Image 1 (cartoon, rainbow, N blue to C red):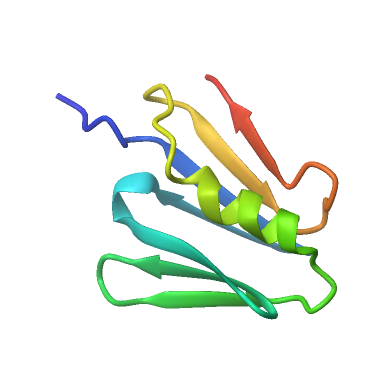
Image 2: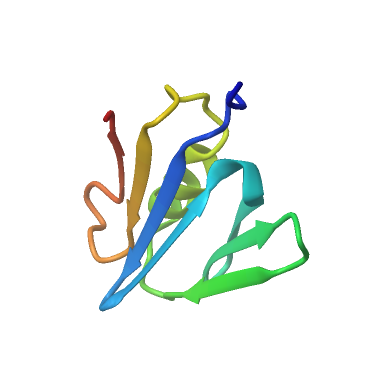
Length: 90
């Protein structure tokens, strides 16, 4: 049986694309100059973008808290400040 958090998160930043499972993500935190992704294994990844607005960072940081349908894909695109978070239901 799959876990309720068993969906993919895809992070896009320029030409870099990172894909991981929600169950591997510990948290997403907004910082003064970007966003930090913290994983269960101790790995942290920080995106620094001083031009990113507060509401955009908050939307990204809170997006992982919701429970989505299994098999869905949460797409976080740091190049799109208008709609940085999209849910793709497969």
